Image 1: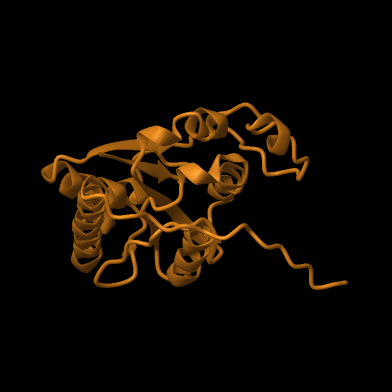
Image 2: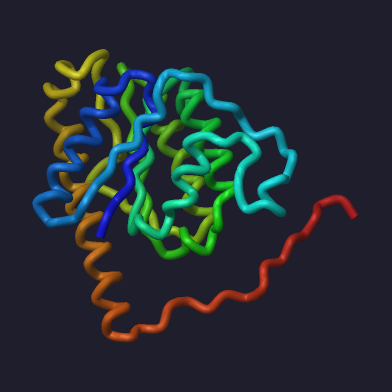
Length: 207
């Protein structure tokens, strides 16, 4: 089993990384592999609604979005991490996630657990947490929770390391992710039938 952890911060080893690394340690203890994808500092295009991905199966902007969508089968779970910018996820993270979730083969996301993690100095964490969770709720992905909202506080990694409650929240999140992944694996091995969905219905509000 393997979990992809997306570091949506422009700082490769900043506060968001510190939170993800805490989760990584717990997953490693359970022999669950991890990969932290750092989006980098280079500008990431937002979705232009060209819909090319509907015919080609990949985004028209050939960057890390296409690299990850091509590897979706490798991952059994996902953690989306972002700092808080004006009570929202970082712009680069949002641009990446919008294109990733829109252009990928969504059948390869169904049933895979997802968790959102945010870092902030003081406020805006719950709004950002809610924003990130919406990527999971629209794709039939179980959301992994913790014993509090998945957030850490601090202006730099050293301050985050002093946020004892925040770090504990990350560790509990790691335990819950590991447990759910193991439960899903056991269920599949036991032949438990996975959900069968109706054909998708789209209803426009203006007729």
